[in-house]
Amino acid sequence: MDYNNLFTKFFSDLKENAGIKVVTEDFYLKEQVLPEFIEKYPFLKEIQDEIFVLNDNSHYWEYQSGSESYPMGELHFISIEQIVADSADLKQFDDHPQGGDGVAACIQFSNDNHELWLLNENGEQFRMSLDLPGYFTELVNLKAIYGWQYLFTDVAWKQPQYSVVKKDLKERLSKLKTLFPDFDIAKYNKMIL
Image (cartoon, rainbow, N blue to C red; front, top):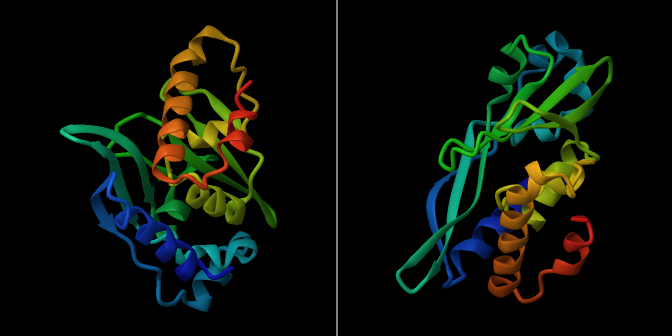
């Protein structure tokens, strides 16, 4: 996948929209990964293309309407070097230091494959139905809005403890539809049951 074009289009879509204020933008793909690094961590072979994105990148944006400002989305990709140095089974690779929502996307390596997990502010873990390429694709589709990762888990939406997450996510999806009229909100609203 051409991650340079994927993320360049994502960022330009945000910047060109009059209803959006980009607050933080610091995003660069790694230029190279030493072969010795991959040899040292053989479980990375499966995600060799994605490693270039995991480069301590960040992007934070808000919805603007008149004088109203509403935090909408953020990505903060932790560097691959920090990820592999983490001794935890679930290694954080995307979190939200600007938004402070306590949500992190984590990766768990086993042999030659990986699983993605959502870790929420209460310490609950939800396995995601995405691999890393799918994660990057959906993050771009959903403009990295807060809570988007829940759409790809088996969270029990009817449980009262998730009512705020559900409400906030629906509100952000609705604002995305306003900002981007071609956005397929129906596809994602169906995932919130």
